[in-house]
Length: 104
Image (cartoon, rainbow, N blue to C red; front, side, top):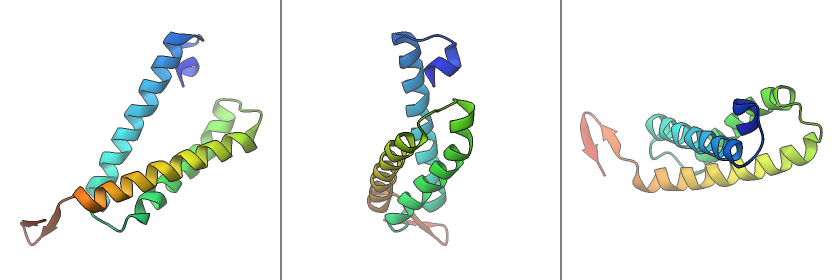
């Protein structure tokens, strides 16, 4: 991400790339919490796989990734872990809404 955004390589572009990736993770996590709330934990994995699919449709061409199989393996693993943690966290801490009243 950093090289794509800055057009350079090095620590600065790596920091920019990580900042972008982390902010995306937080943003998509908040979106999931708003939409799914305390849904079953595995819905977090389903959400992450939806994000993965969207990413795999664009990134290999956009970033000219030559070794697609290792990229997919690492990416799927990371997104499954992300979705698991997100789903478990939201299942435990998200607030449930019923008929205008907050139910914990």
